[in-house]
Image (tube, rainbow, N blue to C red):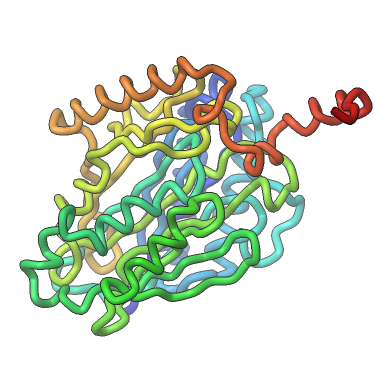
Length: 365
């Protein structure tokens, strides 16, 4: 039996400001998914939050991009928006729901989606990650390190089953096209693309020797859908672990460096990505710094056994301290680059309104 894992998220309002999903929102979402499980649409589910984003993790046998599953997610987000977010005047109610009517698939409608379908192995460790206050390109660096960097993933050299490497599907968010690049043979080509995190985003990773899916990430860019800044994309990621894939510890090692990502306050600043347990999944200082949470499950005939709160570990305390130090350093730049994003990214913020106000006062120098 093939199992599909779907992780679909949306910002449908939070408490207070862009801070944290409210408990009533979580409870209503759980109720909706429980009803879907009772009818047999879902095998299992888990509802959680990453900062102000409501995350729906679902398992089923319907395959990826299934209209029933996507409608369930859409209906859950809209009902939470209407019955909780708007009723309690929570901030940004329904923020990621950019269209009014569901059209068969939530891709391109605002919510972020990561999905994969596969035959369960004898043991199926599954890791899911969700980030807040950043964009899909935030996964580029860890995905490269997990599946292509032997200094991060010892199995790339020690485990013969991984010596053939992995294939990376890179999505061009500007053109809506994608290309598959093989590592290690085309490593430099891959790096040439994914270093431009605002445009080239890793969407999927496959094991080269048999084409088995290894990872799937969301690639939604809200500003490109709406044509304006409506909040950061806050991406999600699913990764399979062990037995021919990187080990759990190798996957987590990729988050041991608080690398800079775009987002943070008003989606307009670079800041360190801080790995945190669920209890710290709330962006406070300057609406940040950007956060990532990770949950670990064992999949058993589609059932989600767990989770383990992967970053709830003192081994990551020093990473969080370093992230706080980097945040302090970046904040001291105030409105100046490199803390503030470059002009190509600022086009989708409120900065154009400032330029419009001043345009008639610009004179030839």
